[in-house]
Image (cartoon, rainbow, N blue to C red):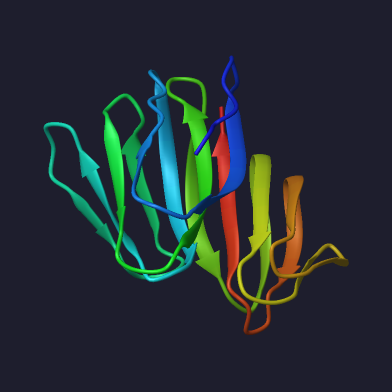
Amino acid sequence: DDAGGGDFGWRFATALIEADVPFSAYPGVDRLFTLIDGDGLDLEFDGAKNLAVGRLFVPHFYPCDVGTFCRLHGRPCRALNLFLTRGMWTAEVEIVRGERRLHHDGPILLFALDGAASADGQVLQMGDAAVTHSAAHIDAGTTHLYVAELSG
């Protein structure tokens, strides 16, 4: 669970969570956390209500300033993390199926969650990511495609 340290505007990465573990704190950073494989987990926040993450492909937003402990429900999990420096970047995230034309004034992050998809003719296999800018024609078919439109 590492946003890479140092200064950044945004980071996009997967993480394998194999055991109950504290997550690193990143002051001034927000996280969109999406479970992409596994039995689920609980995120326990210092001084705040816990978050049960049991469904795949549902983005959950929370600030990384707060101490966070991850408790697995069973087998290891894999998560997709989008880290955003607060005040610099925001994101609108949705999970898309089927065909769509995207128009956005900024970076668009794509991640094939459970099968093949295409973006402007580029094929993304399961687990592949791509960044496009401003516009894209995507075809996810029956696949779940993670789409994050960044503004900053």
